[in-house]
Length: 166
Image (tube, rainbow, N blue to C red; front, top):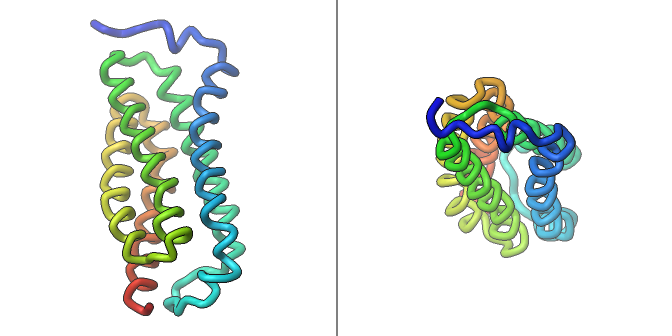
């Protein structure tokens, strides 16, 4: 395939894993810094819809999703792909990851469900686009992003309901 590179697929699996895990772990930790101090205080005082899950659900769900995101990136890094296509997909993923981390700061740290909505609606579109790009390179990588797409879709409805109730 023209433009196909063997540079990334030739990297040792553990190097690709570090490259895949690093940004995802950083985004997760950044989001947690904004979220955890506000769960027992500000968030606890908000009116929530009946479909709001208990707080303990979020950590295992997000841990699983972040692991799947890192796995998807690892698959993209190892896939034989046109370099331009690969870097566009990875660049879009990094933007999506940054927007995802920013949501915690906009919703939790800023105490603003409205700002959360300003973030999460375009975030959902970015995730869908990233999923499409990943799927074109590696269908398994695309499938690994589906839980993120579904969960953020649900979170969008939850964010909207919390905004309306408060």
